[in-house]
Length: 76
Image 1 (cartoon, rainbow, N blue to C red):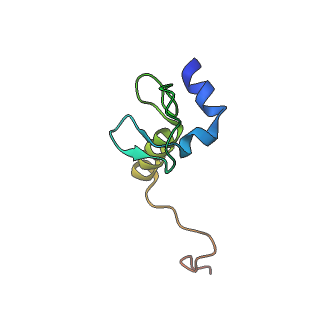
Image 2: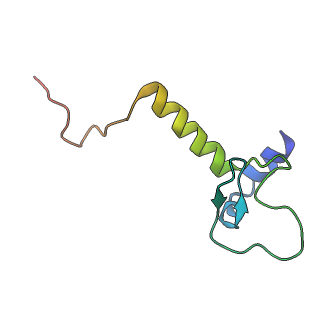
């Protein structure tokens, strides 16, 4: 949990290229070449992966969400 909290306090690191826990590539900026681990915890967790997982979970539970102003709701 400490590693996750530290990453959440450094949101800009999500922009650095890194492999997420599910094997997907995140980020769009090359990280510094100093060898320090950035953007993920030692087990591969990253804030971007966590948000993606949460969205996927919620969409399977709640179904696709519709905007109130998209004209798809009929009143009356």
